Image (cartoon, rainbow, N blue to C red; front, side, top):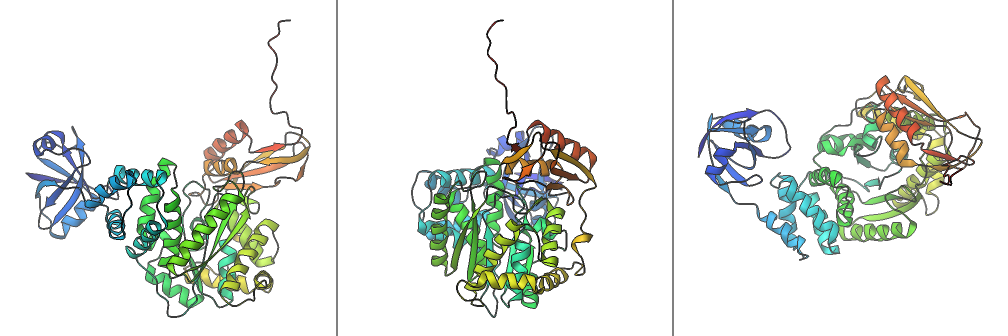
Length: 506
């Protein structure tokens, strides 16, 4: 069938076209089927339907298809039905509980990267792996395929260090301390990080307050070799690109299959050439890992996968039931981390956790003796070498190396949440604090977030501030404040939770 082209300049992240339902019926295709679109070149695309957006005799080409065909543009294209990719059948095989071989998994990941699978097919794959977890062999093959279908960093010298946090804890700004401490001791640490999906600020959102974070893989390599470390957004590097595509589908499903979690973490580490990796596994109420027992199992699985991939992996089970430091939100967190680097002083939770993880990396990298890493990390912080190295990292990424914590400003619109009674903070709801920060505008509004005055176990007086909400926009502050007042993120001893009365007649 020949159709006249109608470009649709919308990026959908996949090769997709729109047909009028009349033409689709004539061609014998349904929504989700594939067609080959041929001009001077041929592109396989997924079909969408419309009754009125595209007229009969026309074909709507989304941005990605248009870009492919524009290499040699034509106004008329020919389309014909195309078979589903082999990997679509492999998903059904996985759903039936059958095991996949290495070549099948590689083909599946390749189709994910090349946008040959629909969102429904990806959702089916993720759901099947959530129900039927992959074997150790399949997980290794999945990880290797995710590494091999993207760009990889190769350094002339090593060892290459890296760290990762499973997440789920507000205010997890420790990479801003760990990376410069490790790099200041002569080790290479090309830290690629994510942006927040459900949180109030991923490491990349934080670093973007100080410097650009979007670089190619070759630029990441060059900068790391020059100053010893970087803090960049992994999504701009094409490193393990399948991971980002799977995460986009996982989010609305609210699932995180075990094998995908392992592969997601280790593929990013393998792609940057990491030799030694420390993985932070926060545990406790409100985190992704409910208890220490689950944390130990995850640690064993990560260590086992690391061995299969030739990486040395150590895991740290950490306390995750309370925010790290006293800030949540990009600018607030950066200000707090910078102050620690500049003065050597700050919240114990932030300093202690950063020193422990940095110390583990220093020991694994051979620059500190066993059991002495924490001490060397603290010395690197106190003597100013970590700050000097962080300024080098900021500068090489295009930021202002002379910035100080006093230069970092939070949103000017503020509101306080006060204690309803005298007593102690008995409960601190992490997820609620993150939700309030997001309603205030974080992470997109860098100045939005929450400043924490009182944490769990600390004494408080009635009317005393417990939290301060910061926002760049007044309407967002009002929304966040209403939400916080409707369901308080803290519980104070002596606070009346609810009065339940009898229905006895008087």
